[in-house]
Image (cartoon, rainbow, N blue to C red; front, side):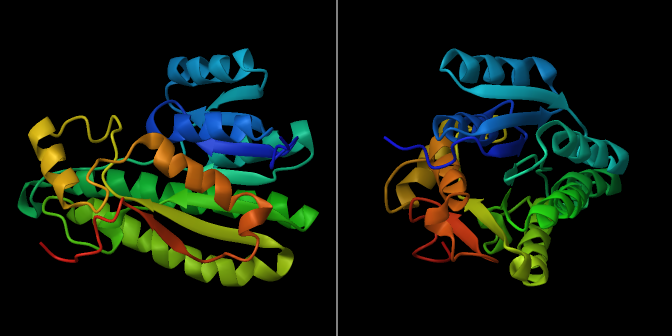
Length: 252
């Protein structure tokens, strides 16, 4: 079976767990060479080892995506080592869950720094490398919270709404250079971020989804990988909802 991303160089941020780890394994299965980035080197190394045991290639590069100098060094380092960057899955993110009056300014700034500033910095430097080759694909992780209301997620929802708006503008800027930019927007998925929720709450959410289950990291990862293949060559500037049909019925 042909591998759709054979020998392509792909950067995955937030690659140590959850959706990022599942995506890294998915990209590797399609033949890509991976650069795995995040703050927790031990978790990143574990994912890299899984990829290499399966015959793939992966490098680990720790970086704080909120740090402008670190992001620039990360992307330039990839370009210097490989001479290219074919695709990037900007998945690193964080949240703050509490009613708005209980959130602090530091909570708000932390969420915005990672989910908006971090993605903006990554795209800025990824596009620079991709434009030099005349092609590239960027996928970011947004959220169902960008378009739906959820109690306690005022900062997180705002950050993902900003991300959806950001890619529409940026896709227009770079489309003529052969670069596509999309978001994948998960519903509720079993990840370390949702592990704090009681199982009863997760099952309540599952009951409202058309598919009657909570999402798994691989459900989201497979869409992110697909968006980076030539099969999605005419899709750009879109935030694609992957929620098992939770949002079909609208407000609850």
